[in-house]
Image (cartoon, rainbow, N blue to C red; front, side):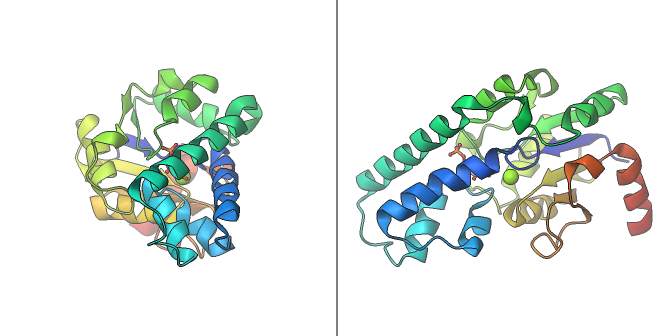
Length: 221
Ligand code: G6P
Ligand code: MG
């Protein structure tokens, strides 16, 4: 039986995935690294330093910067990002999310956050959602980022649940891979092709209701 829900943040709870993309796009332009849709999609869910490595690699520049320069570039991206989320408000929430969280609480499901982002607590506070997430995986304590299963395994541990009792929710292919690798049920939010590995797929968070999830799990069983 499902007893817990483990959420990704950017692109699942809030539109912040868009701001991460814009902030990286600015860096890619400065580095003269080509920005493509597949690079943009591939960066979703990927930690800050791993994202920079992917951008450098895409531009064949992986050997052009020292470790110190890379740290500066990553810090600059984060400054870009913080500027972009400066004016964030409830319009940046994805549709139906507060209602879904309320419904999960009302049905006594355990809830956890499994975001790779070091900015997740700022975002949850800005959107008044912190009270739903007493359990948050600390990404700075992980050995490996998504697509490795570690973050979702840790999420189930924080909830004191077995992986098979958990559903993970993700907008990124790397995140779905992480959930599946952890042995949890995966819900993908977005595109069928990009998220083909998801157990259950919704094109929008507004379709993500307990009734729809239960129906989808029966079909898959
Ligand atoms: C999430 C986002 C990524 C971002 C990562 C690290 O997984 O989907 O786009 O790169 O978090 O975020 P941070 O805020 O720590 O740079
Ligand atoms: Mg995401």
